[in-house]
Amino acid sequence: MRFELVSPERRLASVDDARAVRIPGADGDLTAMADHAPTITSLRPGILTVEGPNGEESYAVTGGFAEIGAGVTVLAERARHVNDVTQEMFDDWVAEAHRSHADASDDGVDSAAKLLADMVAMGGHIGLNTNQPNL
Amino acid sequence: MPSLKDLKNRIASVKSTRKITKAMQMVAAAKLRRAQDAAEAARPYTERFNAVMGQLASSASGSDTAPKLLRGTGSDQTHLLVVMTAERGLCGGFNANIAKLAKQRADKLVAEGKTVKIITVGKKGRESMRRGYSQYFVDHVDLSDVKRLGYGDASAIAADVLKRFDAGEFDVSTIFYAKFNTVISQDPTAQQIIPAKFDAPEGDAGASTLYDYEPGEEAILADLLPRAVATQIFAALLENGASEQGARMSAMDSATRNAGEMIDKLTIEFNRSRQAVITNELIEIISGAEAL
Image 1 (cartoon, each protein chain N blue to C red):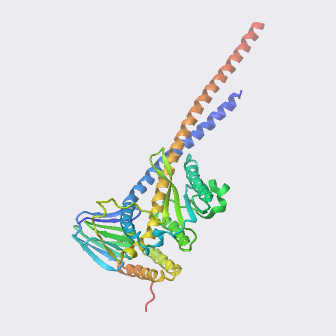
Image 2 (cartoon, rainbow over the protein chains, first blue to last red):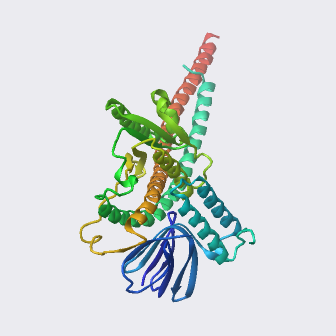
Image 3 (cartoon, rainbow over the protein chains, first blue to last red):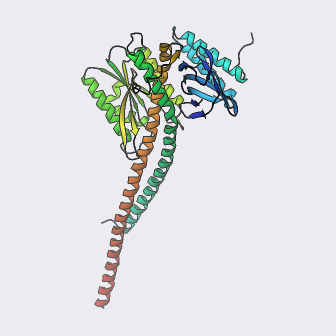
C-alpha cells in the first residue's frame, strides 16, 4: 500500500509498501491497511504512525485530512517527524491553540478547546513537557 | 561636446551600473531557482487538496446547509480585493501589471455600484495603488521581513480575510497575483477565493470512488474550507515569488545589455574626441613650426 505524507511546503514522506498507517482522525484513531474502504477523514493534532518495511516511523501532524483509497494520502497543515519536534516548537503550537481558543466565537469554542486539548495530549505522547498544572 | 574627462567619468559610472545590474541578475537567477523549487514542492499538496475539495464541494454545493464559504453570502455587493505584489522594485512591469489588473477590476466594480475594499500584500503594490485607490484600503500585509515564505505567512493572511468574512465585511473575495509561465512571461491573474470555486473532478477519474466521510461530509467541508483559502493564498504567494524573480532577472538582463550598448557608444565618442584633440594639437605644432 502506498503512503504519502504531504505538507503545504513539501512532501515529507513517501513509502511504497506500507503495511499499516495509524491515523489520528477527528473522530478517533483509525488504522488503514490495504483494501480499507475508501474514506476521507479530517485530522486532529496527534501522532501518525506508518509501519513500513523498515520499521515504524512516527510523525506529529496537525490540521488537514487523510484520504484512504488505493493508498493513503495524508495532507497535514503542519507535519514533523516526532524526533524533529522540539519543546520550543511544541510550545509555539500550544500557544497558538491557546490564542485561537481565546479568540473563538461561541459556536467555535468547543472545537477550539478540543484542538487545544489534542495538541497538549500530542506533546505528552511525544514526551515533551506540556506545561500543564498538576491536578 | 563633452570634454574627455566628462566622457571618461560617464563611462566609468555606466560600467559600475552594469556591474550592479549584472550582479542583481545573478542573484535573481539564484533566487528564482529557489522560488521555483518551493513552488514545485508545494504542488502535490495543492493538487491533492483541490481534488478532494472539488469532490466534496460538487456534492455539497447544491444543499442549502452548505457552509457560507462555499455558497457565498447570497449577495455580491461588497468585494474584497487582495492585491499581492513584491516588496521590492526593479523587476520590470511585474508590480505595475498586477496593480493595473486590480485597478481595472476595482474601477469596473465601482462602476457597477459595488463597494470595494482592498488589502495589499507587498509594499510596491500599495505604493502604485495609493493614488486614486487609497480610500478603498482596509489593511496592508508587510512581508519585507520574511526571508523564506512559509505556509504560516499565508495562513496569517487567510485568517485575517476569514475574520473579515465572518464579521460580514465583504461578500466576494478575489486575489491578484502573477502566474509564473516562463522567465520572460508572467501573467497577472485574478482568482476568486470566497465563495470558493473548485474545478469539478473529471468525470471518470474522481467520481468513480465513493468515499466514506468521517466525521460527516459537511463537517469535513467546514473544517477544510478555511484551509483551502490559506492553501490558495499560499500557492499564489509562491507563484508570485517565482514570477517576481523571473521578472527581475529579465529586467536586469536587459538593463545589463543596455548598459553594454551605452558603454560601446560612449567609448566610440570618447575615442573620436581624443583623436580630435590629438589632431588639433598636431595642427597647432605644425602651423607653429611653419610660421618660423
